[in-house]
Amino acid sequence: MCTLQIEEEAHLLHICGSRSPSPRPRSGDLSLFDICWEDVLIPKVAKYLSLKDLFNLRCCSRVAQRFAEACLERRVELHLSGNNSKNIEVAFKVLARCCRRLEVLHLACCKWLKDDLLLPLLKQNKQRLRAVNLNECVNITALSLQPIIVECKELRVLKLAKCQWLTTGAVDALTLHQSNLVEFDISHCGAIGERCLIIFFRKLNKLTILSLANTPSVTDQVLIQIGNYCKDLEHINLIGCAAISDYGVRLLTTNCKQLRSLMVQRCPKVTERVLFPLRTHIHIDRTYPSAWQFRRFVQAREV
Image 1 (cartoon, one colour):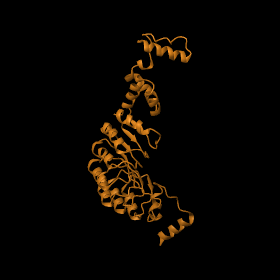
Image 2 (tube, rainbow, N blue to C red):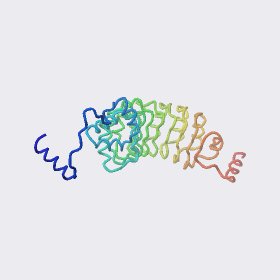
Image 3 (cartoon, rainbow, N blue to C red):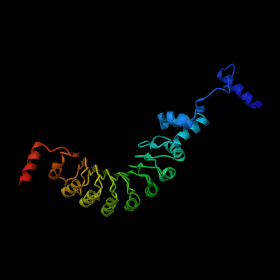
Image 4 (cartoon, rainbow, N blue to C red):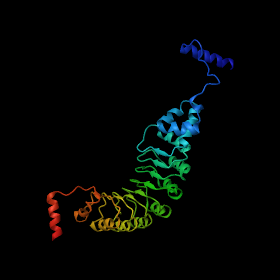
């Protein structure tokens, strides 16, 4: 140790009021990080640490930083939905560099998220991703969707609600490259055309959960295609789809024998004439009609 370092250490000890330096650990002493990372610390301990815990730990020392980043590398889920805290962009760059085994990615309502932040993370994890939630990510573009569509072969869940940048071209690309989706959400996406949806649902015959709320291009013809090809459908959200009627809903529910819930609030052309027989075996979000409404409905059927 040089003279300058000795003088600095003595000065610091004097400021702290210490009479003598703390004893150095003996060569036989162990620290937490001497325990095997692969077999013990990461599988048995790291699973109880949140992202905040890992980032706090990462600031403690260089060894702690390496350990925290090793934990991030093996992380399979990343949940940041609604997280718009200060410096989140800096933290996300660390995640994009370290995370390599992600299977579930939830980034809904992240207003700060842009293409240049998201693309590196997708590049690192495209082989394993099974679920991606980008609901209300308004500052990214279809450029970020390209690797998800083309390269995420294990994708099963895709949520893009209120993504106004989602175009007909992007949905056409989905039709070509993704046929194994089981959950799909394009609520409030007004740029998609009816023809595009009709072709899309002819290929996605494994869907079980579908949300099309407030999508203007959803018509009876779209519901007919869903009923013809998505036989395993269990839940469908059609809230605010003003163009659909009893005709489309009847054909949909007749063909989708597994259907368990149907959401049709604010669909003025859908009436109790088609809903009433379904209430015995399907959950419907629209409230049950009052007694006088029920009598009017029965009288109308008798006529």
